[in-house]
Length: 545
Image 1 (cartoon, helix red, strand yellow):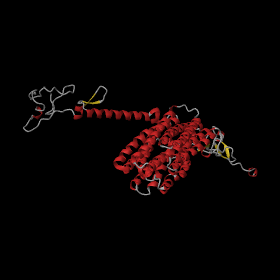
Image 2 (image 1 turned 180 degrees about the vertical axis):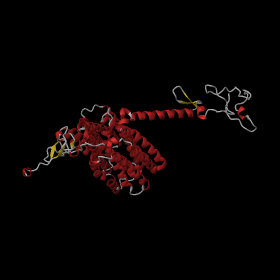
Image 3 (image 1 turned 90 degrees about the vertical axis):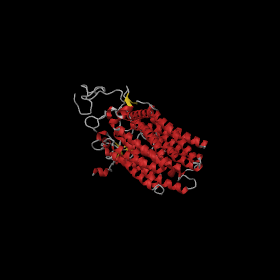
Image 4 (image 1 turned 45 degrees about the vertical axis):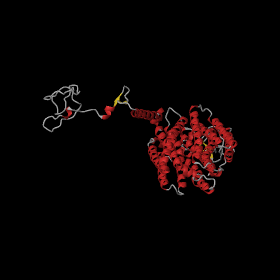
């Protein structure tokens, strides 16, 4: 046998030679020597050290693979076992999350990519809310400073009431670039977050907060229009939207909200804004990873809230005239069930928007201890979170055979608890309203999604979701305006919002029965309306010429 000097030869099978087998010209190892004694011997000339043995690495010495393929420490200690269990739990959690996000073919349809972008949007909203909690809510929420309250409303809420109705029509005209629009909503918020870091204590805070709100609502509208394009074949739109909401709440709101709160406790609002900037950049990247086929909008027919089939300048579309009347000239009116769902959901969103701002203002005006303020907000927020999860879970399991009737019942429930809060006139009443309103909002939204999917033809579903989301976001803003302006006495604030809810409930019930208080915007239409197109019937004299 031969080999390099100082290295032991190997057997035919490639295994090291036995430790007690002497090499050529070398004495047998004395087994009584201490470990490593022979490694200090010299081989060859004086002063030439012999090569040392190859020992296993430190990692191999401390861990080994068990029968199940897990890395187990050779020497078990509390720290090592805890680290091993923590790593296993983390890996299993990530694997479970990925399986859920990619289930039902979502990874192939593109729904998984949209899910990640939606989670980033929820996470960004949570981080911004934490960063601006003390400044935006509490700095302006003082009973003495009516001027600041009015300025807060004027700059951060009221303009969105003008902007929101423009988002739906603009979306219908956006035939290309929807992924770019989604990514741009994140990129713009990243820039706004950076500006907020350097302008946190100035009046610029308020218009920047408006920008954040508008961009967040714009993402929600765009997401609703993109969702039908990434629908897996094995699940419907109702389950898909519930799935997006659950992922957004768990992975976005709860996860990022808790992380942002921890960062804010250490580094203040600036740290939370830095975190928000990172989330916004990540959201832009995730939006761009959505598949390209969401851009294909050829043949889409935009929806319309009004119904004009009996008007003189509108005619009902006949499929035989498809070559003469292209899709871009047609409009798809929403049917009675969808209109009923919009009125009911809009009324409920007024209540949820009201609660979002009102409780923060009441906490500041009635309680001066920060711990008590946080407890009040925590109680109402926890009730809303429980209601939201319960509503989405119920919506995913119910058979939505008559979705408009479910919306009517949800609206009745919200109006009833709002009246109850007037009677109770305390924080407990507000928490009960938050619980019921959040659950009813989630369930009513699922029912509205089912009505849209059942009512509209495939070429109009994307536009229908975009228009409905615009209406709901606008309703939420109207409720938020009430939460800012109304007095901080519980019974007064809930008395006003109860009156609004009762009015919305009456319109919802009338729409369900085929009537309306507002011409063209209620239930005076068939359950499934036919497509319309502008029609001009010239006078007889012009026709003769």
